[in-house]
View 1 (cartoon, rainbow, N blue to C red):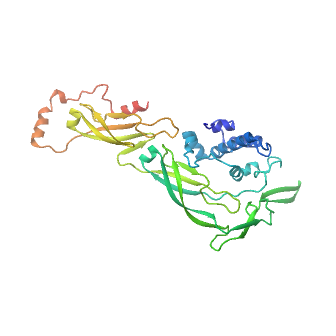
View 2 (cartoon, one colour; view 1 turned 180 degrees about the vertical axis):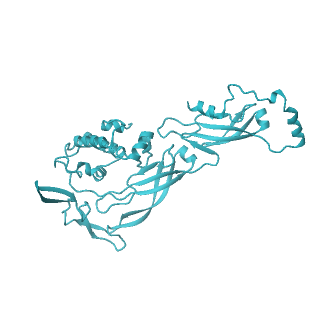
View 3 (cartoon, rainbow, N blue to C red; view 1 turned 120 degrees about the horizontal axis):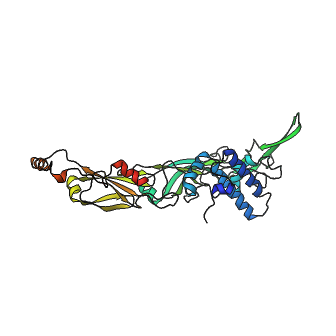
Amino acid sequence: MAKRDYYDILGISKGATSAEIKKAYRKKAIEYHPDKNPNNKEAEAKFKEAAEAYEVLSNADKKARYDQFGHQAFEGGGGFGGGGMNMEDIFSQFGDIFGGGFGGGFSGFGGGGQRRVKGSNLRIRVKLTLEEIANGVEKKIKVKRKVQAPGTSYKTCSTCHGSGQVTRITNTILGRMQTSAPCNVCGGAGQTIDKKPADADAQGLIVSDETVSIKIPPGVVDGMQLKVSGKGNEAPGNGIAGDIIVVIEEEQHDKLQREGDNLHYDLYISYPDAVLGTSKEIDTVTGKVRIKVEAGVQSGKILRLRGKGIPSINGYGKGDLLVHVNVWTPKTLSKQQRDFFETMQNDEHFQPKPDSSDKSFFEKVKDMFS
């Protein structure tokens, strides 16, 4: 099933400010909060849907990528994207929006009051060739991530008694005020270390080498960030693992140049080939193809091979391969060759006679994209 537009989910326009986005999300969160709609699967689904929309639209970088590429900017398989959020994700990331504003009727931490700590994210760069970008690829990457050490056990925090929060009452000129905050001893997890092996850190975690499979969809662009959920550092106790942020790095091709979804190829042909016509084999991202060059072709001619470019990340088809014909003029000639061209120098067939089809390079490029 196709995903709904994030702006429609929150009931806002694309020009909404960050304050309007936050206000719209808070309204939806209150309406569909699980404490207000117990055992209501439909409300829970809408609650998660609103949180997913807010996760993207509240982040300037993610919002820009979503506006440009839509859902495809985050959905590459293997757990990419804003999707797949669970209740722990929502309450750990957006708890500040719920805090105190619901009139005390909601737990703000998924029903039990205890905050599940999320592990830190890992950030890696993945280099891709144009061929891999065009066809999509699965990469197996070795990462070092923190995992819970075998033999580690936890006990209920004696400060917050497992709630993850501490309540403080202070006297003010307005009277006694009660505030709640995450426990500073357990960090809101509700648990502290009981036992751990000697090689574990203070949180009971050790560093482990793991190989992670990353499925990258066709059409990604240099600098795009994708997310692999749950493959970052683990959190202590009953926490949830962080994510891997995958940054795409596009390797330069030796013959093809990318411009959006289109590719450009410089084809050099000899003067005789330009006069008589020829066929040439050229590289594409899906293999070599042979193209025909008509007799009398002019230098600067652009041949368009439709659908031989890069797939659109939004699924709107493929770009084209634009072949730029360059007639190579020899710099040295034999006496016989020089005599021939001197004879032809004033011949009418060698005189430039441009017509409407012989536009300048800039005119051709303008026509292509107009």
